[in-house]
Amino acid sequence: MEETDKLKENDHRRLGQELDLFVFSDLVGAGLPLWTPRGTILREELDRFVQGMRDEYGFQAVTIPHITKKELYQKSGHWTKFSNDLFHIKSREGHEFAMKPMNCPHHMQIYASRPRSYRELPIRYRETTMNYRDEQTGELNGLLRARSFTQDDAHVFCREEHILDEVLKIWGIIENFYTTLGFDLSLRFSRRDPSTPDAYAGSSEKWQRAEGELKKALDNHPHAAIEDGLGDAAFYGPKLDFIAKDSLGRDWQVATIQIDFAQPEGLDLTYVNEKGENERPVMIHCAIMGSIERFLAVYIEHTSGKFPIWLAPEQLRVATLNDEKNILKMAQSVVEKAKTMGVRVMLDDSNESVAKKIRDAEVMKVPYVVVIGNKELENGKVAPRHRSDLPELPESSVGELLQRLSEDAKARK
Picture 1 (cartoon, rainbow, N blue to C red):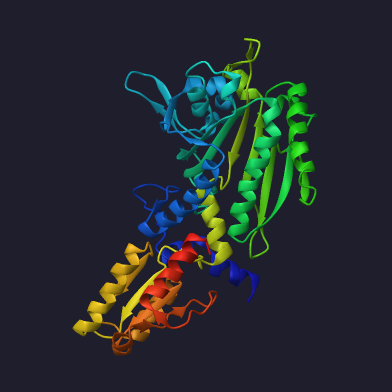
Picture 2: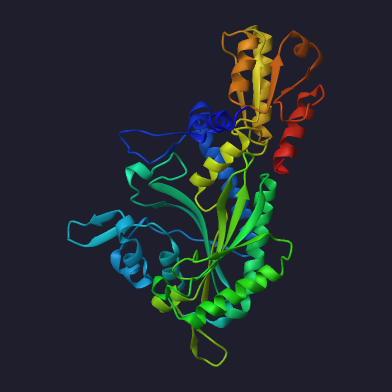
């Protein structure tokens, strides 16, 4: 197949519509995706995977509003750099607010809400939340670039001596996530360009220390393929950008780990050290998927919509051979048992031929399909049809099949 044909076949915008994952509405507005029940399952399963790994390392969930006074972004430095990208809001009392394009200044206010001791550090916050940016109409591109997007965001507040350990923990989460989803990763070490110092916040000395800590993490992974990203740092600090190669051979920047000395100073974050003196914490920004929307655009195209059993919005479809009462009763009992075992299942008892029902399931890329007819009614066994990329399962009892699907989903197969 020609490369251009493969790109068209895997286009996430087409697949999103065909697989009933997300829609756009002219009344809602361009660049503002609406997620269907099937698409929402994808989002929630991915996020549950990420947050489960974070919870093992002591991250705590927080929740913030979607707007803020402009003064917060003025103090953090975002207003000067990103003002033109913000959705601006005027209250009826004349106050100026903005829809949040990022979450770190809000999380910093939670940290700053009371005095902190060195004994509390590291403090780790996590939140999956929507953000908004006023992208130009001509720049919008399906889920790859949208005006509303969801970040699986997290921030660590720590001392300098904690940085290496925290970065390595996050790196482990990133590797586990992308390996599970079938991506090969490489790295870009995004550093400050010393020839343009005005483009960055903070002193040269702090930048050197921050870059030094990330270099230590790189030294702990000598096998990693590393690209030098001179000039690609964030305005507040250096970062490790993880690059995923998809099944079409394209490279995508996905996860990121960023060290930030600048914003804690701008927002006057402190903790009390062993001597009773105030010190500045270091802030680590760490997103695993980054934008869930953008990640799903990449992942849908990477898989051509053939999701593994644990992610598939519909893991099993039960189709009836005909509308005989006993056949329909058995099919309904299979569906009910599947639901009690946590298997995502749908029943097709429509007045269509079996061939049409199977074809409909194939179009929706359902992993497994079982047809309930007189044979299944007599022996109580089913022979599941499988999607071409999945292993064939033997004929078995309904209970054995559902147990296998449930276990594979829990094991993230």
